[in-house]
Image 1 (cartoon, rainbow, N blue to C red):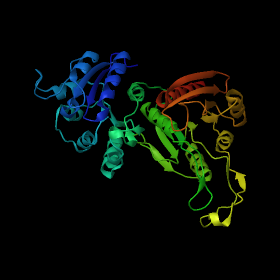
Image 2 (image 1 turned 180 degrees about the vertical axis):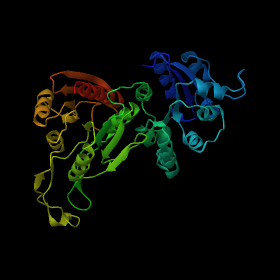
Image 3 (image 1 turned 90 degrees about the vertical axis):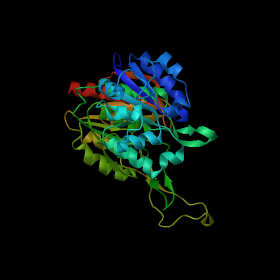
Image 4 (image 1 turned 30 degrees about the horizontal axis):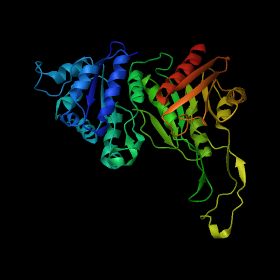
Length: 397
């Protein structure tokens, strides 16, 4: 997919710069021609020799050290994509404001190629309103953002801001060059996150869904040229141009999803919707002093079944099944009962799969009886497999 693609890889001065070495190797292994640019700050973290040895060209570091009098323009015009990994708060600010401070920032301004940024920084820096505003502006301009993960940070801290896994970064780059005529121009609706059913003003019945898989599908669908709507219970970076509808409960998700589905060609029900909700919601916080409360539950509305009943000719409905036992039996039964076209099933009891993880392994069951197994991989790669299967259903219609 990346064979012959010219990728300019910008490395900035974050502690995660060492991971860009693995990104370089993976891009080259995928067939890309990689041109590395290291900022002065990056040189404090990693050495140029390693990148020169692994990349396709020697490392570039300066506007003035090359025989080419305009290296930023040459690289910017010649690139098929520019990837900044890691992307510090400083480079995000420079890109947002158009500040040309060094070779990398000048190259970013001198290109019309797609730009992918992979932010990595301490949690406080990531959550700062200025950083989030910069990211929002960049996303609206079409910059692809590979969001960071939660984990160990510099100095032994733990939190959100850890650079995405190198495999996730490369998968995001690959989606730039992967198009599907069946998805391009279509309206793809994705639900994401887990619903929350209130017990009282401060407590709720919920689940562990992070929304990562749903947003991965949204990003890939956007990269494939689709118009994307996301109905979500969580806040995550959305693809450029996507419409995001925020909801909380299963009832709210049903209303928003059915409304958006009226014009959607593909509906991907990734969200983990609660099966039950309290019959009575306490108006005030339930106090321990009052003893153990008796909570009566009632079923929530079945959104996937409602979508299946209202399905238009040519519309493709994709459901998800998070299982802990009897995966195939439960998934195929759900496929028939809900009148869905595809069911994407995964065993959430397995390690590194499902909720909160950045990896997943799924089995895709189609209404025509075909089965596609996707082994443990990134959620971006799973998203691509799901949309490829949905595209095949569109082709059949």
